[in-house]
Length: 257
Image (cartoon, rainbow, N blue to C red; front, side, top):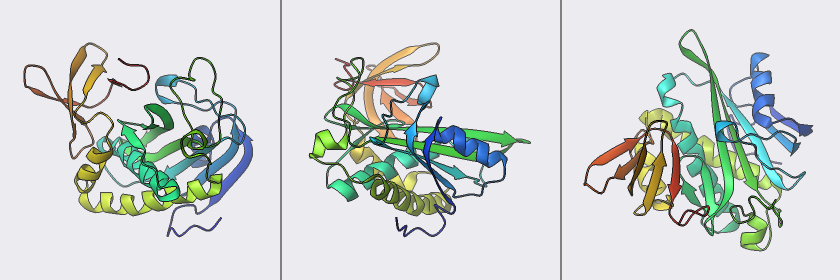
């Protein structure tokens, strides 16, 4: 595979099988792997999603990739990279397939109201500073049958487009988009340059959302994101709430009616 990027994918690490690409990247980070290292695998035995969930990844049927970064930035900016990767992955899907994938904030891509891609960002700190950040990306490529419990909630590029790109083509497209976006992000120090495009692709914009946080549940209308990548939700009373983290259900997606 030929990458057009300047610093991503150096080194490029590939394995037939591993537990999870994020765990593999974190182990290599502990051994001194550099900023920009990429970890790609054909088969994940213990793929991970947010909040300890598993990520189904039948052998060779999807893109399973993690990127290791060593950013010089305050730790509070790290969550913005999940949002940035979500936009980059959506752009890459459009580049490769010509089809639009919507973004389900903060870490999924959807097509036909079903999950196509998941993103997991994990940060490690030392002495109050970021030691490294690992961003994992999983995109369903060729799956045509999903387990019973998720068959109504998941989809793949093969199902949506009739055919799926090769794994290395999809990986290169994601990395090239992310590298260009990451440079702009570092320049701006926030996500302001990306707000308009992100909001255009945001599946929940203008729709009812239900936000489930640790101590409360909020129902309102999604307005978009702010420059920090936080979700803006207007309550029935007219107030605007900023959502930093939490489970967000979007009416019409993943069975939420």
